[in-house]
Picture 1 (cartoon, helix red, strand yellow):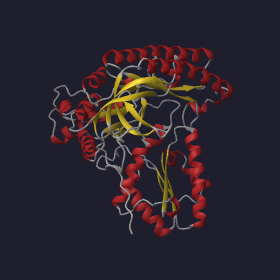
Picture 2: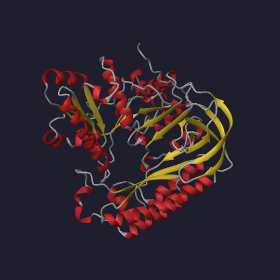
Picture 3: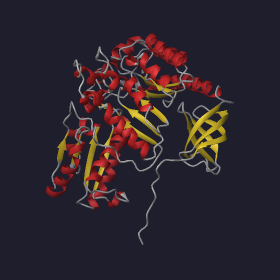
Picture 4: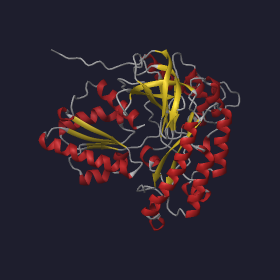
Length: 470
């Protein structure tokens, strides 16, 4: 989502005549687009700002801006402790950036706008994408869940959905530009469209209504207020030229049977479901305000695996949530083992100022205990991942080549539909964007090895071609 927003900002600036600087030190304006979901992300931003400050000491007129979630949550700290920051702009104020940048350059004054919007979705603005095989496409903004550990509703506002028409137009443009894969983004994609249908329950749909919500819902006689994510997946799958569709992240509470059916019945939708668990303890899940139990979560996973052939399931887990007992953590281990995840992102709880959980300091779990639990959980998850990977040895997979592997110049890295990395021997014709059939020959915990059987489609993604002016 941060990458998608950065591409959006770049498009806005390019439309006003700005262009990317070849080097950081050559720039007239430097922006850092920030995330505030974990403390480590904020620490990285502070470090980067220290680097930019040194540039400004040598080049006094350079504009330094902080964009995104950190601008929203820490604007007072930035104003008080980092006076060299000229622009502070929240995630709903990107449209204003060109004017704000011009004003800052003209007046040499600090500019701040962190207003949260109930309507801004940037539906008419397409990001600036220069290269690659995957297009990140935001389908909605904000979140209504208010999990007690999460800062997102406070930094990105309430849920609001883009129109079906706007999303389909962006998908079509991405395909026309040569991107062979799209990933749909939202804090909770399963809620996509609920806000639109809530506001458009009229008896007779007008053309504008159909453009917003799609013909399937608009022509439904009942016109119930409901999410439209399943409808959207089917509509995107019908876009000519689309080859792979992914999405992140769904919320377990809102994973509906029709979404599972849409994944199963739309050939371009990949067989990968990222479903954040966060905890396997019902008590902790309740205190997180997650809205489901461990049993309900496992039933959703079982339903998805039963409905979608060869589905890979990945997850997020938080260790050391305030008040987490050894019994609570054992429950998490048991759920993780039963779910058999293909992989997982695991985190030690990071208090976010302003959230409900951050106020429970007297219940914070000792860091050493959290680290020890983190390692125990990691062992369970590694066993599950290794087993799922071993079971793929001998299978023939459709893979999409992403580029040279980091593990050696004689390998290329590709990705299966299940979002698994596969290292392949480099050979002629395996350029980035190539589709091929590969037989899996070996498995490690985090990736697979394979051999190419057949190249099925050459690259068609757009490449950035450097131009030298003599």
